[in-house]
Image (cartoon, rainbow, N blue to C red; front, side):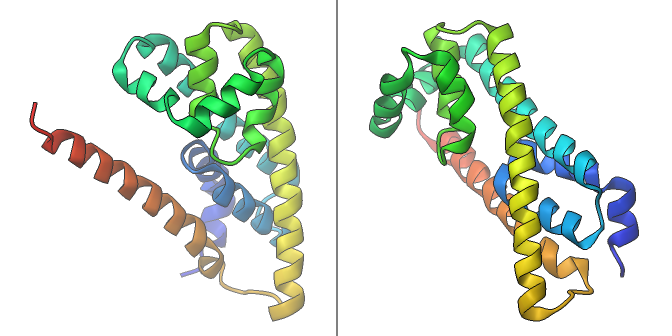
Amino acid sequence: MDLDPLLVEHGLWLVFLGTAISSDSVALTAGVLEQRGVFERWPTIIAIALGGWVSDIVLYLAALLFSTRPSVAKALDHPAADRFVSRFLGRPILLAALFRFVPGSRTFVPLALAAGGTISFQTYAAVTAVTALVWGWLMVAVGHQIGDFIQSIWGTIRETESILVWPALAIAVFLASIAWRVWHVWRKPR
């Protein structure tokens, strides 16, 4: 089965959803598919940026709504998160602009910024929108280079399915880890 026509028709929606759930692997794969000519450059950048931005906004709003919950406090209580946030919380705009580029910080920084109340939603949304656009462009550029590298080693890969295995696996692992955590929380005696 050739996935290219399906990806041309619906692929950017999948890129949007994939980057909202598991951002980097899907974004880089979209860049590889852009290099192959499956996607056009700017629509791919926009889909990646919107997916990442929506994820940022949802986490921020969830933290605003649930900031008094123990689970939010527990997420912010991790020593690495505490060191990172305490270093930059005095400069919330800088923190909002940079966290997308720091691995492992995409979950707790929006929580810390919302719970700390040091940046308004409007400012956060504007800064993260610009940052997501830069990040989307960067992911497509790097994915394009990865596609060039793959092509220089193996030649043109005819089956898109072989390219899509990696982001599908990353999303499956991410969803399995969430299911595992939820299962363990429900199993705990109350």
